[in-house]
Length: 512
Image 1 (cartoon, one colour):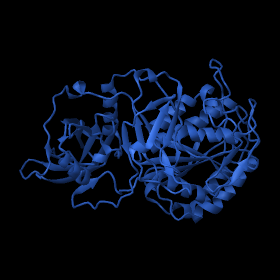
Image 2 (cartoon, helix red, strand yellow):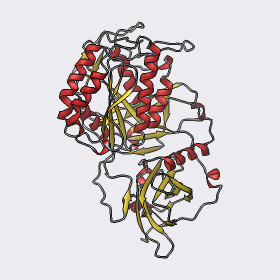
Image 3 (tube, rainbow, N blue to C red):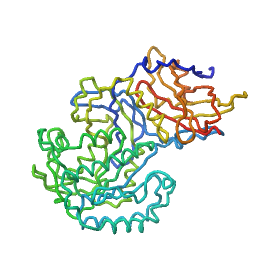
Image 4 (cartoon, rainbow, N blue to C red):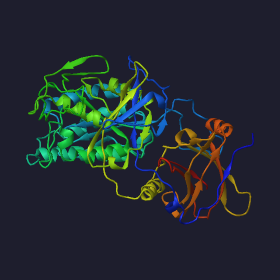
């Protein structure tokens, strides 16, 4: 068949205002494991069933874990995915604020022993949360540390120095609400930074309990998620950044904790009401007394934090084993999206259930989300996504892109772009034997540090026959465009947005 190429024309200035745009989507990222804890990576969209507030929800968009061999790049070809495997970033947060002194010391010594034995520190970062609620980096995100995979070998003196500097009494003026607020704030700070990295994102929150403060204006049935202050903001931020919090506890006495909160498992979580144990990934069961309205077991609160964010709770496991399991989960993570009805957005927590029809598959996912009302018109939401990708210092990889550049072949400066879009990341609708989509392409000139001028905005509306669709699924959706530049341009950024889902991808490359 003939080569499929969509040659683009510059859109009219009112293009975005005229575009059909989706309503807000709920995105879930379940990790699928078999009975032995191994990844299950061959599920289809039909294998998943979603229920939101007891209403069945059809799967609107679906992406499988990426575990294929990497596609080699040609000369002058650039990609926002260096590997065909789903990337993964992990941040260890050693929380001094919410642990007793004996627990802090035990954890410190355990980390001093285990961290240097890690095979690699690639895509792994480490922070302390001090008694004052401040973040202290041991190995911070971003350059130049991002390129250092050997940092765990030299981590002990850095950690020891930071721990000795933090060895003093807890500030007397720090109350329970301040403690909760500062803890949640710093989790959000880390999540916001992690959102600049592609792929799955996990925080290993090493702590012993969970402080909270309650909103007296809300009825509290015993479930702290529904009535605690600052939790809705935390939930929205972590969901937007696609960050899972995995509590890790080395506490000497998990049945007492520093200030255990109220019962977390209620009628909103049927099947969990009588929970009196938490089973770790190795099959070991830690048994605790049932938590009452007055609170007796911080483990239950930490388990609820994991379920609120799509993480998992780990009890007294070596950090190497925890990191290994979290990495395994990353290779088994799917993306599901569904479109709730307009009346769904009520600024309340919603309970979600995701089931797999294949026997023996266990799913780990975010079991709640806060249905924040977004009064912006749909087009404004889309513009916000494009602007974020346009202004970001790093590229986005939600949609996979490859771009090969060549000379325009004239005296006029510029580049010819041959772009391939990963079709598995797009929503291509099938009707009458044809597949159609709706995309936007932005081409932005950059100085090397910031955008220059206004980007070119273009529209792509592919319509593929069944045969063309098969070819595109194998080779990518091809786009072709000439892009003139000026002498001031050092880089060009290509941004693609799917109008049907607001998913976005970008790739930046040098032109000089």
